[in-house]
Amino acid sequence: MRFMVIVKANKDSEAGVLPTEKELADMGKFNEELVKAGVMLAGEGLQSSSKGARVKFSKGKRTVIDGPFAETKELVAGFWLWQVRSKEEAIQWLKRAPFEDAEVEIRQVFEAADFGAALTPELRQQEERHRAQIAKKK
Image (cartoon, rainbow, N blue to C red; front, side, top):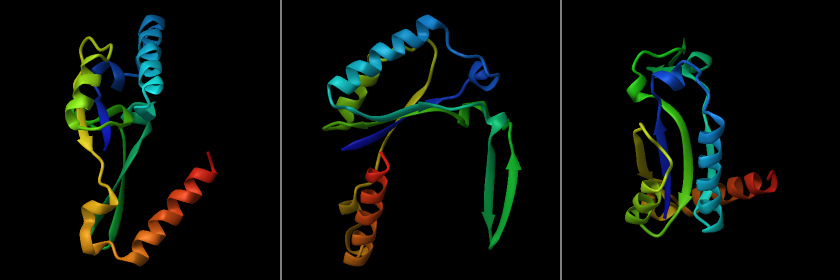
């Protein structure tokens, strides 16, 4: 099972306050544990929403909205992608993360089997081709 672990933004991350050397070292140590255990597939921090944009889709129209965005509690400051056996395992790993004041969300990633018959053999092959092309770029 794959899970996206979403680190929520806060006033400091939105203000562009960077982690201290100690915070970076602590997170590096935690990430190393995740990698050694075969859990971590990816993980990145994100720049503040002032450097981002949103694209709203409505009735065929696309509207671009430049950041910053007001609702900090709804913004993402970083993420991991983890491969674990269960949501409970993801929770146990997350409890070990070196956060002091943070809110982190865990969401399961859809797998091909979750889509049932709607994912036709042709669509499944297309998805597999995409994944193979992405893997070549690594």
